[in-house]
Image (cartoon, rainbow, N blue to C red; front, side, top):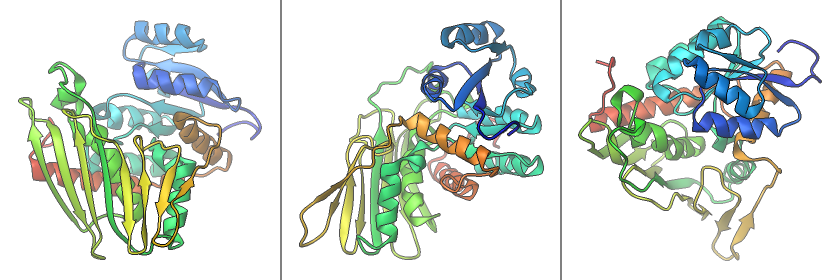
Length: 332
């Protein structure tokens, strides 16, 4: 990051869809951030987005945005099939990158981005807001300190009500469609936050006529004997809750476990304890705040969202896709 540490961090936004708009809206409310430019493959779309949010500059290509020397960091909000190309352009141009989840289509692409970041000595982070959430961080601290004993099981789900239109990107293999990469990344990341990379991955899914998964279950196993039962769906509105069960208690998250406002600790002989950790920030702002903290500290990756963890999640998703028979164009 160039300039004094007290100056606002200068952001670029790559893509102009709904997630880019939500992130930009939240970013504009942060005093330490300045949204300076937006880039799209469509000059018209970039211009409309810039006018909508009062962004000074619009670029009609990803490469032009990446080459903008007045940017400290670029947020990549394309569908994940384009993450490797888009984030790669930014890293090669010397920009720090916050890249949406799922990080890439597969672990190979994720590894390539990590290598690029290290080659060009630039910051890179997956936009896994769950890991930046103060409530989740409080939970992990309690688990680490033995509040529920040894973790034995994790349960988590994320499903959306169907049907999904066949023309939607979630049904398109060329855009990395399917429930697993869009929704399953949350339960998998949640489980691996607590237990690390599993030693065994089993999965079963219903596939759409296009060949993407629309209803998927996963069973992850660890050498410790711990298991995780996870699901994701494009055909059913699941509870979207999570629970962590240990040998001496359990922690339950309500609907929306991936950006929760509280959890409840249950232990034998104790009344249920509710924990909250308000910080006054919205979910997108928390990940943005962590990026800006890292840039000001001249760090190349976040200790909250380490690249090793992102790569491990991508390996798990790769193995799960191999079990259910989902392949994307160009993967072989």
